[in-house]
Image 1 (cartoon, rainbow, N blue to C red):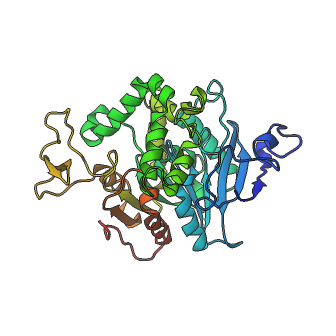
Image 2 (cartoon, helix red, strand yellow; image 1 turned 45 degrees about the vertical axis):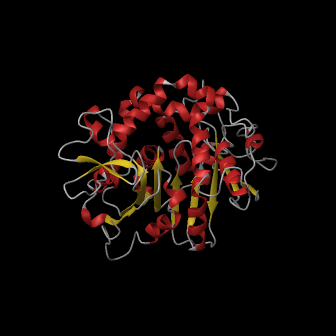
Image 3 (tube, rainbow, N blue to C red; image 1 turned 135 degrees about the vertical axis):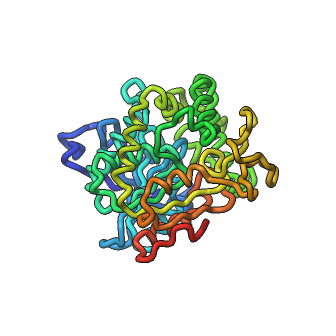
Amino acid sequence: MGRTRFACAAGLMICLGAASPALGQDCGPNWEPPFAVDPALYPFEHHCIKTAGGVIHYIDEQATPEPRGTVLLVHGNPSWAFLYRDVIAGLRARGYRAIAPDLLGFGMSSKPDPSSFPYSPRSQAENLAQFIEALDLRDVTLVIHDWGGPIGLHAAGASPERIDSLVVLNTWGWTLHESDRPLFHFLFDWVNYNVSNTQELLRTGSLPKSVGQSVAGLYGPPGSQPYLAVRNAYWGPFLNLSTGLPLSKDAIQPTNRLYHYIGLDPAFMEEVELAVEQFNDRPVAFVMCADDKWFGALRCDGNASPPCPPPLECRRIDGIDWCVDGQGQRIYPALDRWVGLWPGQFVQRVDLRPGGGHFTAEYEAEAIVNAILGLHAPVRNAESER
């Protein structure tokens, strides 16, 4: 799996020698990936850097000494930098520097004991902020997805002068309120489900298991080589590949603890909202998949009465119940909410992709690359793809 290179940042005291003797055991000359990934899918060099929470593993690819720009890609749950593999390759081919870290507990980063590292959105954001500072990243295009939205925005908010522009995928960046339930009813249900069923989810590993299976199904039928290569990459950080069960209770904790902090640390999302305000004077592009259950087109809520917020009505389209307007058109509340946070002149692209589910980069890698390429185009093309 590629070559290993060790990154050293004196400000964080991670240099070999006087820093941490254990560091070389995690990522150094003798470091080995904690699980195997098909090198045809993930042919990138390994890099590591130590933060206060642990060792962050990351990809840092560039084809030229003077890249066209620097792109920081932040994943969510239960994915890792593997999610962005095609985006990374596309950016590198076009002369960009692409950096994709694995959050602590995810991917190939270290997995500190849950008793010492809470795996909260705040703790992940603080360590990501240290990562950005340690690499001295500047003029960054920040790409965010899923939990990488609030985590990435909060981290970037610690040094907003380093962020040049943003690409927003299927994610959110504001406090969740019960009054927003018509807008995010599935997201509320999902958070509540994960909190209420913590022990069962830790025992079965059903979240990374189901995600790995569903994403792998995009590449081939179950049991096929393409299917297994992708599934095993998603399962590797958390699950035994033979049984599909968690490697350990601690190994699966990072995928569940995030949800608890929606209630335990409400101030975190308020701080994320403030971070968004720091960036709404910079170019932004949106690439969102329309059929995402949480952040795509609004689906009817069978547990609510009425199932759609008035004046919308529920209508079945292609076997799914959607909330539609008076013209029978689906609506996209998360995308509309995002776009409304930026003055129009800074919105460079609104690319609503037909079909496609939550894991945007698995469906629309080329669209993400094109959004980055067009971020600084002189003519604004917002709404051109809606």
